[in-house]
Image (cartoon, rainbow, N blue to C red; front, side, top):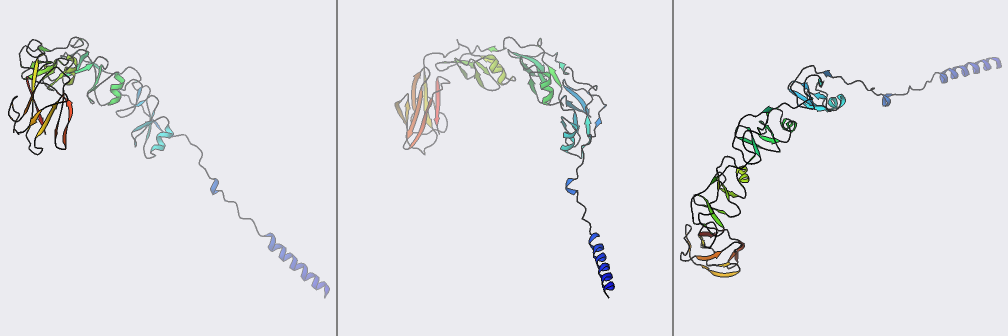
Length: 322
């Protein structure tokens, strides 16, 4: 019996050993370590030509790329420093590299304006009815603005045509104005400069388009070149003596209104008018003053019209209180 038991035990041992040795470890997963190696960026070399500005080269139809941004993405319509940057901006687009031999990279293309014009001092004609400042000689027809350089003008809007001002076309010297010879009844410190218009002594130039006065002819012209410029007539009346000002109101909601000029009480408004009255009108306050630097204020119960400087525009200036 023992040999049989011994044999059975040996067979059982081999069976168990076979079962234990058939177990294998699960293969290690490398999913977390997978990577895609860097590959060269795919782009198309643009071979077309174009009229590009200095520092730019053609990169696509009607498109110029800056020298330091040679790669263009058709989806973003922008240029980039590298092919990868262009691709990553939008993978749907096609990438082009500019053509360094296709034009540009040299002098900016502009047209020399040869027309003439009536420009103010410090300005020259640069386009039809347009004057450019001496320091801003380049004009872009798309932006209708002037720039210090051709490149700046082009870069502002490549769709525009660039013109350079004509230094011999007019302007750059004395401003053109008409000396007003008419007379008028102007307040102290004012002279007649146009029909029913008086200009302050320090602002002798008048522009008919803006209806304002300026310290210089150039300032008047530049405010609106479409206007005609007049210089005040210092012999036409005004400039000295006294002037009157009448304070009045068209509303009765405040009742009587006390008027103060240069800090002193000068009278009370007791009447209303539908239109500006003349100096000395009843129910108004008329004050005779001279020189400049006069101030006024008014009170009516709890309501106050704050002090302000008086501007004398004629022999009888009207001041309405609202």
